[in-house]
Amino acid sequence: MNQRILVGIVAFVALCVGIVGALYIAPPNADDTHQPKHFQAYPEPRALSPFSLTDHQGNSFTNSSLQGQWSLVFVGYTFCPDICPTTMAELNSVYPQLQAVESDEPIRVIFVSVDPKRDSINRLSEYVSYFNKEFVAVTGEHKALFPFVRNLGMMYAIAESTDNPNYLVDHSASVVLIDPQARVIGRFKPRREPGKLSISDSQQILEDMPVIISK
Image 1 (cartoon, helix red, strand yellow):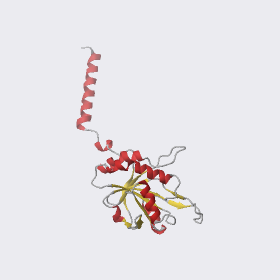
Image 2 (cartoon, rainbow, N blue to C red):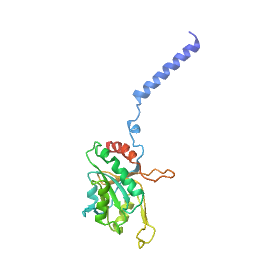
Image 3 (cartoon, one colour):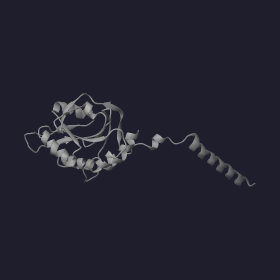
Image 4 (spheres, one colour):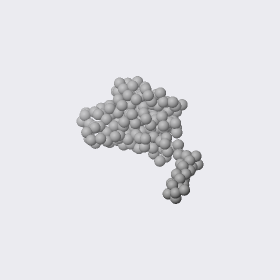
């Protein structure tokens, strides 16, 4: 037999053996192919320090209020002119699909107002009900809000005097995810594109949530 042909046959057989070995002896790690594409998980889940806030119905909102559910948490304020209403509308647009995700624990949307001076309980109730009556809004005094927001890995700051009725509040635009054990596990960061609002993409949240829940 021609030596060149013989070498080709041997190489082909070796290739086949290598493929079979890769598939059966060392198959691909399923975990590597079943990971969230957009969610930024924290290295370790963060237990929330004890906190006490008030929800839009006037009820106490504490650590136990977050247990037994998946919570998508967004920090903002009702007088926000752009990022807050856009993000809330985006979350509402995928809320029916999120509710349809197979899970033992429901997925909830929580809006944390960091503007207690203007965001009364009644105003918060009207605000979240405008987007979705199942959404929850919470607020409290700054001495309770600031450590809670910082514990989420977020921030906010009032950069001007609140004597101006139209003052703005700087705040993080990410959507934080809290697991059913009331631990912060990561966030969906906003997309930054020139000329567009930096908001978290609701379709990315919808794509990743079933993967996160199934892990």
